[in-house]
Image 1 (spheres, one colour):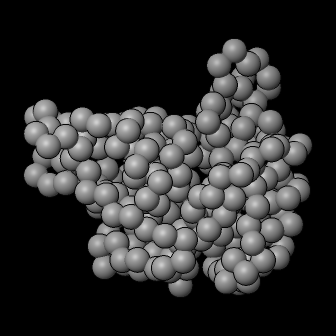
Image 2: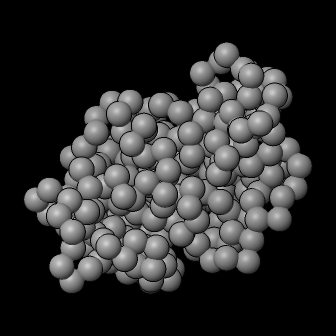
Image 3: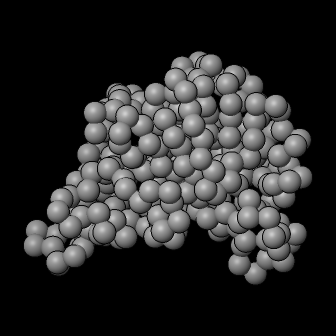
Length: 254
């Protein structure tokens, strides 16, 4: 399995508009973060997790611009804002999208032209499959297990694909889900900043979850400029934990 981080930033990206902090002014490319998204390349298939407003830019610089399907964690704009650019993948088919039913319903409200009975030529055509919090589902012959989590008061999903768990925008994760993930080879999980936030885990809370899951390796994503400089923060983390960065590629063994 290969995991390619397309973006590792929070909803504002890094650098953030109208900010002059040392992170936003950093010349280290690891501190330049587009909105969070990733591609899982596994068993000959490429599965996109979330489709950020930066999707076009991310795919232009990706190692391979092929994708077979999209998994959506939730409906927030920084995770779905690039869906219109999926039109490039819909010339000869409807593009497969997997999400909770509430997410699909909101997509239909936001992008009605994608679901019209007689769509305008060239619009993205989406084949949306509803998924739930408990049942594994198949994507291009690959089993995906949903991971129910809470984003503040909003129920959303993370995903487990083989040796990888990908969790973003988490504020709380139930004990039974931590137990299910215990010992997983690679865990990707959000850590917004050093101080508490109402709907995202901050760094100490994320490190506590990582200790409880005890993955072989953990990588942090969905970070704001307040996580600090990559070169400063990363060395302070436990040996098996690292800040991810845009365009990082992980080779994951089962």
